[in-house]
Amino acid sequence: MSNNYYKSIIKYLSIVISACTIYNLQLNLLNSQSNVSSNQFFIQQEKKLDAESKFQKKMPSFGLNNLIADWNFLQYIQYMGDTEARNVTGYSVITNYFETIVKKDPRFVDANLAISSSNSIFAGNPIGTVELLEKSLEAIDPLNSSNSFFLWSYKATDEVLFLGDFEAAKKSYRTAAEWSKLSDVTGKEVIANRFLDTVSFLETEPDSASVQISAWTLVLSNNSDPKIKDYALKKIVELGGIITRKPNGTVEIRPPKKV
Image (cartoon, rainbow, N blue to C red):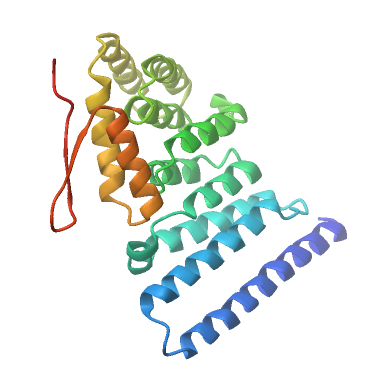
């Protein structure tokens, strides 16, 4: 490899190490402040992670796109694994990681499959998920990626559950079937037929509102971020769901009344 390539690696790693050093110093300072509660610490930590992930999304790549995508995926895994913090802050940083991975390495299929559902359910951002999966799929050749057809099926799932766009979902499932037949996955014909069976089911025009209410209820129950919870409740009401707030602060959700 050329000296310029190694210089680029060193330059990028220097930036990352510097950022991490500053971050660790800030964390140590926060830890030394005994008057700061755990919840306050997690909230401040979330703000820092948000700023750092946005910085990585915009920073020059120096020809190291794959490395940056890998780094963000590892950060995402660590972020999701900190359950105690996420119970306090929610999952607002997921979308930043997802955007960076797709921007830097849209062919990183395994990462996109892992993060897409989290972005929809935990971050409450299914529209963003569909858009990012579309960008990823534009860069992928099905002949060179054996499991990329799953991206189409994941996209279709969001189009059904969250967007209620059955026409888009049917197109996605059909494409998933076509791409699966081109793959070297065992049982690809069976997989393709399952996708096509789902298309046939969607042709029957099932009750979209009830399905979407169930999906947004899942978002509501898996997130502590008040903005995302309010957005999920808003979507449920728009779909005709009936919301009852109980004295203990919990929320009861019922499907729309059938006429």
